Image (cartoon, rainbow, N blue to C red; front, side, top):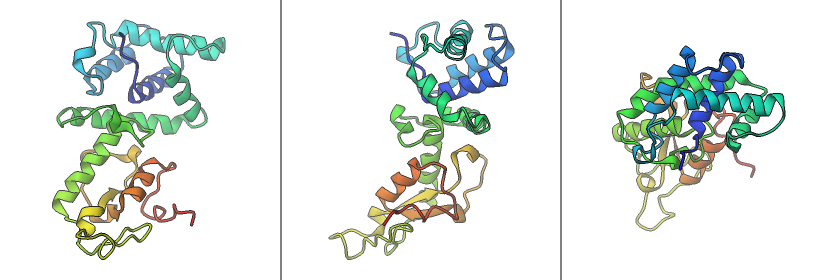
Amino acid sequence: MRASWTRDEVILGLDVLILMRFRGLTQNHPKIIELSNLLNQLPIIPMRIRRDSFRNTVGVSAMLRNFWEGFEKSGQKFKVGELFYCVYQEYSNNFDELHKIAQAIRRCAAWVGEQPFGDPAEAQGFPEGAILGHVHRLIEARFAEKQPVPADAACAVCGLHPVGLYAGLDGQHILSWHWLVAPVDVDPALPLKPDDFTLLCANCHQALHQIRPWRGRNTYGNILLI
C-alpha cells in the first residue's frame, strides 16, 4: 500500500508548488529534485513500508501537478488525498506563513534525523507537523534536564499549585517546562534561554501546543475563558 503524505510533507510540497508559481512541475526541475530528496530524508514514514519508488521525482511532480490541475483549474479533488486540500485552505490567505513553516521544517529536518523519532503522534497538537512538534518537545525535555522543576512551583496560566493538592506529589511531578518560541522560529542553533520557558500543568501545556496563533511570552497567560 502506498504511504499517504503526512502533514509535514504536504506543507513542504505546497510551499514548493507556490514558489514555482504552479508552473514547471516536471520531474527534472531542480526544486522537485530537491523536494524529493528532502522527503526521503524525513524520518516520519518508517522505512519498512517505503517502496523503491517512495517520493521519487516522478511521483512528487505528479502529486503536485494533480493537486493543481484537479483543484485550482477544474475544482475537482483528484488523487492527492484530503489533507492537501485542508492544508491549502488553511493557508490560502497567508502563503507567507506556510513558507515560514516550510523553512522551519527544512532547518530542523537533518537535526531531527540524528535524534530518536517517535511516530506520527508527534504531530498531535501541532498544525505545523510532526517534525516541528518533535523538535519543540525535544527542546523542552533538554531544558528540563538542565533546569529541574521547583518542588513548590505553580502553573503559570491556571495557577495550579500541586503542593498540598495531591497526596505525595509536588510540582516536580505535575508541572513541566513549556518553550514559548513559535514553531516557525524553531532553529536547533537557538540558545536555551530561561526567559523563553515557563512552567505549566499538563492541561495548559497541551492547550498552548494546540492554540493558534501561537502564544508567546506576552500572551500565553491569556488563554483561559474563566
